[in-house]
Amino acid sequence: MWYWILHVMGADNLSGPWYGFWSGFGSDLGEIAIIGGLISIYRRHNCHVKGCWRIGKHPVAGTTYVVCRQHHPDAAPTHQEVLAAHRAAKVRDA
Image (cartoon, rainbow, N blue to C red; front, side, top):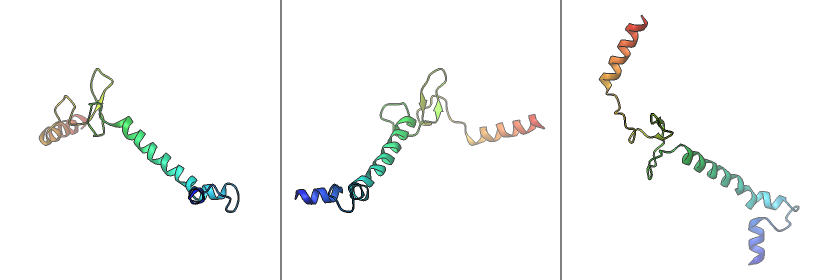
């Protein structure tokens, strides 16, 4: 049993002292690092409201909080308001 564990982990001397390790168990270290990096990025950029899993993109005025659209205190503009603002900007720039 012990030999099998050493062989799976690449710790026995297959073709050199480190070849078996990096071809076996050691190659998984990079995958673990990628998963850890993705978790870190998610935790850094998620909504500051406790328990919210959404990505926070909108800063709250006067604070250091960044929240998702669902938790932002300002109401989202309607489609008509966006079109009216666009028309006003085109007239102002013309």
